[in-house]
Length: 95
Image (cartoon, rainbow, N blue to C red):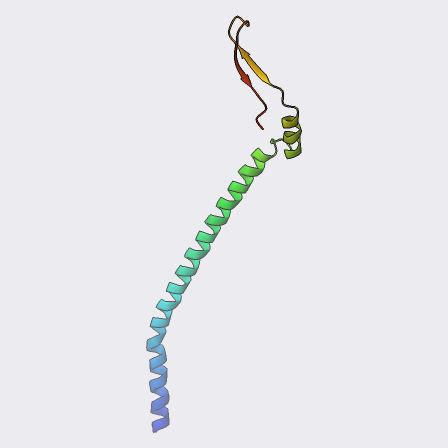
């Protein structure tokens, strides 16, 4: 066996010995990647749930322009006592 063959054999042995370490590194990288992917999926599903709840309740809300017209048509509110004779409180235009 000549020197070049011995060097080649040593290089192959080093690669095999380091292969175990690279397997651990690969498993660690894979675990971290899967954990991050799982976290992203959980966050995205949470965002989707919040958007769905918002859309469900937002469909019943009035149009903003309708609110403005209602405020323009505001009339003074008068609160009387139980007999209806004495004025207790009067609510004026909120603006």
